Length: 66
Image (cartoon, rainbow, N blue to C red):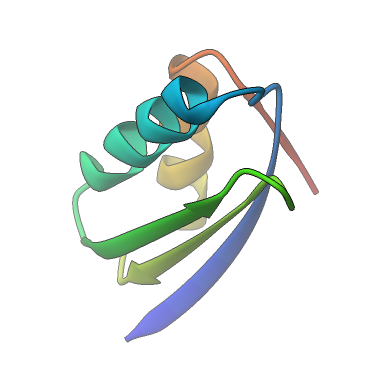
């Protein structure tokens, strides 16, 4: 089981947090997602490819910082 940390730019409120979580949970292979609004980080657990996780966040309207 892999764990990926994504630094997400553009989240400003709990609605943003929930939208990012929902987008990441929709990625095939993702087991769990925990988004922290204060640190603007998402901790994703599962076997999903990082590129697919990044695409889901970008498609939801946010940016991922490497």
